[in-house]
Image (cartoon, helix red, strand yellow):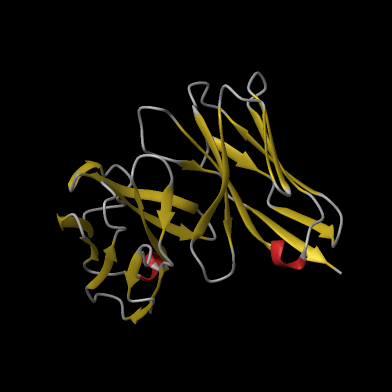
Length: 111
Length: 111
């Protein structure tokens, strides 16, 4: 298995633009998580899905952030419009109930 | 996160033992984890311990849990340069997939 796949690995965009981050979880895993990592706030859980259904989105910062999981093999995290303070590394992780496996992350820079 | 605390930095000489400490506040924590993050990479699960255990050993890694004091430690024997990374402590409850992470301890191994 290739593990959790995220794309793009790096994204540089200008303030106000829409950003879409993508994640392919490990096949057979029924839980998917989106995290954000910054120097100031560390690792924060944004949202998690179980069986494609959002269970807890209390970590989503504001309405500019949205996440979808249309099927068991794909999820997106969208920021619209993006702001410089959204600059961070965004991780996707998937789980079969025990261990969470993390993807390599997307480094987002909003200028 | 606020519920899990770690010291931020640790410097250790190659060949010595490293001890990384973590405290947590949630008495209902059932699983406690140690993750490793190398530069530019995602988090990798190193080891975990159930709350009904007080010690777990896996090759060079020893995890000690003091449930009464809510204190968790990770000991790395014979620390190598490849052990330089950020180490995250995390906890979860048995009925919840959510992980609460500490801020991470940056371990630097010097020759």
